[in-house]
Length: 149
Image (cartoon, rainbow, N blue to C red; front, side, top):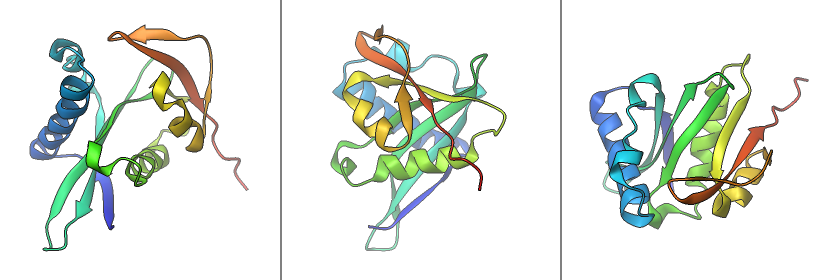
């Protein structure tokens, strides 16, 4: 499997990301579309992971966005197509995003409770009690930056 991860800079790339988010959050998880489309996309940096296909083309298989908030740099809307889960696609996407994170900001997420193990494997630690977003239990998690050598 050959994966290419990078920023989603064009409107067509961001539309691919919105399609992945719709499939994962709205169709699979039952998040109301009015919560998924929150009006913040224009304030965010968007990212896509593309799988290179045998025939030479590519397929967008994962997406996420990040934005600056009062608390720091928030990674959100991380979504991987069902058939690509368990293949390190999400980890590659998040690692790319962490490399793009502003050095002067705390990096954090609101992780779905069911995904805590994934986030711990990519360097995040649980901080604080459980809370609900879109009817789904979440936890605040902070990224521990590697120490500079």
